[in-house]
Length: 343
Image 1: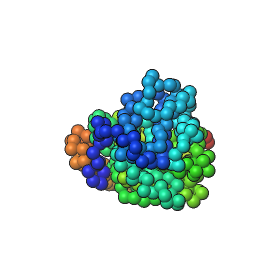
Image 2: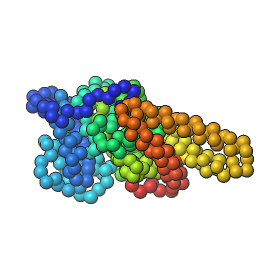
Image 3: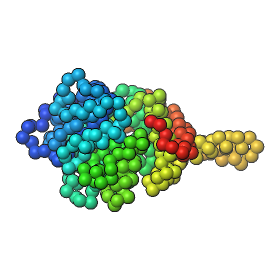
């Protein structure tokens, strides 16, 4: 999905890379609570990369029941994702640390596309798109197409579809590669934040003059939480943490697009109340609702066209509306907090 047709999903039946294939000097780090079907899928996709990584490290709360398809497993005990990633990084031998969420699996060109930038000393980190797998279920597809809409993700839409190459100053750790020397220099992930530990890491990189590059070819397939409950739970987390970050880390978080859902929610409430007495406000409210409705409908049409499913397009409409209201409300909650929101 996105600006063009997506590359085909990773071939789970593809042959594993030959043992004598040249290594990519990267350590893949995946963290999870326990072994899951998604983790098994990710490791299977890694095993079929044309050029294998130096190593794959999996950090789990508890030991898995069997081997992990050639990956080295670290048992962390109960701990958060940021601590787990730091543990994996401490054990890594590669010059680059490639962080993947356990519910994401790489396309075959993932490492090769990123490696073209490894030799550029100015590049401190590389991020790539996390595209919804084409074989995800209906409700997960609805979530994916909601994230992929301009009206929800705005200028950050390239995180969910393959966009153009560019420099960025903030990128999620679901698909983030960091030069190990840079990672160590900034002190790794800040465990006080989740989600948001990746935003803090990127901020520290940028503060030291490092370049974070978005490479569209470094693509992974990222499973979505199903709409509505799982999707809105994630949106609420994002809103709370971005609101808090907008206050304490203004360099990369105090930006108008992050405030728009809250401003829209405020306008809906105040406009609806005030329009009872003020006729011009009633007209303005109706016009703004019409424009908003047209934008949502346009996003639904694009989702229908891209997914080839009228059902997905129709379900995207209430999901977009609920996403805006949920994010706007929780962003305000994060903005007024004196401490980091709980995960």
